Length: 69
Image (tube, rainbow, N blue to C red; front, side, top):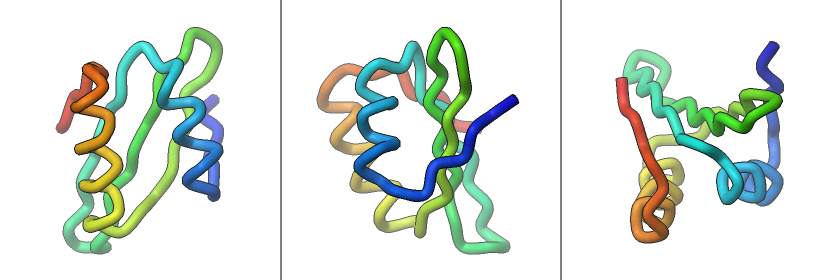
């Protein structure tokens, strides 16, 4: 069962240790759902498009595996 996180700082800690990051864009709602896959859980957060793109840029620089669908 996924766990939704509401603070970006907490989700970033999970993303640092994640095996992969999944991205689901929902243009009709104007949000992006980011999912951090760890061995035990899937942690999710919903963010505005601009904020999510900034975080994804940082994670790409660190070499994280990012899958968009």
